[in-house]
Amino acid sequence: MSRSAGPSRDFRGYGSSVPSVEWPGGAKVAVNLVVNYEEGSEYSFDEDGENDNHVEVTYNFPRDKRDLAQESMYEYGSRAGIWRLLRIFDELQVPCTFYACARAFELNPEVARAGRARGDDLLAHGLRWNEVWRYSRDEERRAIDEAVASLERTWGAHPDGWYCRYGPSVHTRELVVEEGGFLYDSDAYNDDLPYWTTVHGRAHLVIPYSLTYNDMQGTKAPSAFLDFATRGLDELWHEGAAGQPKMMSVGLHPRLMGQAGRANALREFIEYAQGKGDVWFARRVEIARHWMTHHPAPVE
Image 1 (cartoon, rainbow, N blue to C red):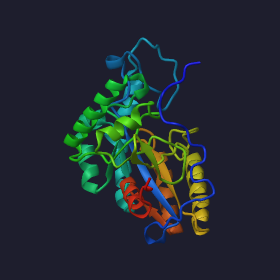
Image 2: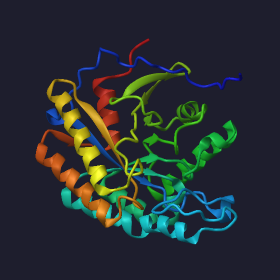
Image 3: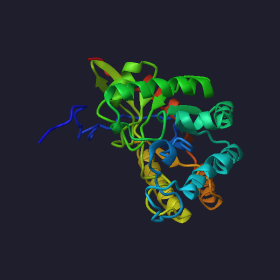
Image 4: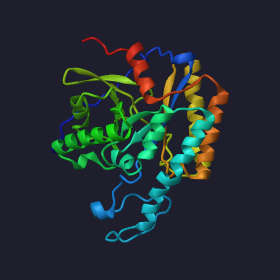
């Protein structure tokens, strides 16, 4: 059996020695609202010879035909959904982190300008919303460089972090470190806290993401999202009250959560968290910088 190269697996993590975390203001949970802005960067029949995943309905559309209906469901996210989400964030005075594909911002730079003006932070979500395991190492390196150059034009600054669609290739983390401009990556789902790893002798910060509190997982019913998210917050808050604060990533997609019925559930979750108190609604870069300051990389 052939084995792929890449980072070794770590099954222990912090184990029973969980770091003593003190979030700003004594918060018991750090909640990071993530807007996955991908619209227009997904696979398209004209460019790739394939349609991307279904959005609202599952329909056995011919594989050799362009699916205009599905494309228009993605367009909803950039035309209407993103603005509904930002209005809710403005109204409730909470920040978000943009996981943005470079191509998506190129197609609608007004969204990039709006996020930057709000003071949100940026994590690069690839040149396009595609799987990097399809690339060779050199192709992936070029895609990272092109994504960074594009986002610097539309957003106006180098992205703080990196995250791939459905996970990294065996080369991704090395290439992210090699690029040199990222504070961290989020290409892992293996913890409730940031952690340091080593890449070719260099300390590198990982801010794990989560697909659990994500509007794409399981049923897309608003009540299901709200139940999962509030229950997750309650348990993490309980752990924080017992002296072990954690972080919680909530993944949102404008084409999904930007629909009014689901956006209403998001509003209810944010209001619930604000009413509960001791919740830090943080940008991802704030979590990264807090960790770098209070939990610096271990000295070898």
